[in-house]
Length: 521
Image (cartoon, rainbow, N blue to C red; front, side):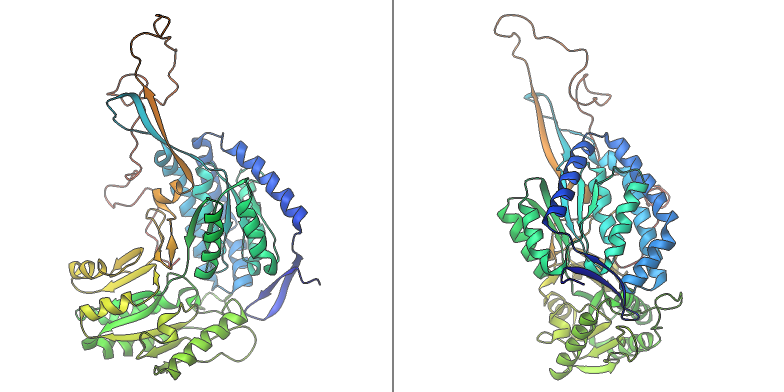
């Protein structure tokens, strides 16, 4: 097998699943050419038809939920119940954009006294390169691709090599749902060639923009390349989210939520809670309840429906989390439970809790991507804010308190892309998702996510001065070239759009057909 082969290993067993040869330059070029052609044609398809394909995609996802979930379990070790939930969440997101996409993308009339008409349109950018990670092989792709396709773009997908089967399955799924062939193209690139090929693709005139979900180091490389090429980029990077428990919180409820917030997806999520900052007066009670909950987690075969924590996706990831735990203990942290790789096949690691952590320790300063929780004690609210902000990252924040107003007031003082009070941080298609600081820039999901990869274009139709230079009256067309007007406007004016207020069920406040989502991706 050559050194450009892409190998997929089952992390629960350590055994090889598949191996395919990475593409050479000629095959990559041919794939880009086909994708570019498909993208240009797709941009001319009416938005209503593009949205209808998203609805078909939702049905296709549900029809193949079992097969997709099994593939995710085999390739990266996600517990099967979570894998099924990942596919279902992707289907809900497809339904959301099928319903709301046309309204969000509708031309928006702007009242300008000096113009006959003025409006803003959101038009396709073209072909977008997406560099995606392994930890949510279906969802990470779908949350970018669905709104981008509804917006009229094409997708070049460079998925993580250890989920190559998932990448190819998703490519086939889009075609099965009625999207044109080659509009979503998976590129098979050997790991050692990814930096060079990615940089070359970003520079390619046929590629209009790039998005990456991954580490801050990878994001810096892609963002720099996009900057040199003067192209749009969106980066969804790492996180070290704070989970703050104030002195008036329901400690039992907070501890139970903390276990879910940290150990979902075996702790391998950018938006998992990682640093648990607890007010001193409730620290002992919280720690006791939290450790008991962690020790009760069921670790094992991810194919089994009662498994809560599976293996880490790769052996090097297990080594990294073990190094972070050991370094933190050497720096003064106390090991309360776990702290070692599990014997036997696969890349399993004990769910681990460290106490007495703080700035200067690996478990507190670095992003921990695995089943490791770091506890720190705060003297008061001011100290909790200081500790929560003592990170290079700024993705999510969770605050637990009996006084929601107090929780919101504290959250406003912590830098993050999302702040949840008395709830676990989670993405939802109705709300924008993204971070700040070293957690990246740009937004996915909701209205913000679909317009990120559009050309926000201004139109202005000037008023006639009365006569053309030859003295003839201006010719009036049978139909104006601009969008239909609102009822109260003269013919030819664009209709206002309200992208921030899509239809909802007034009784619940939930968008039709989209129930609240409670996972941590």
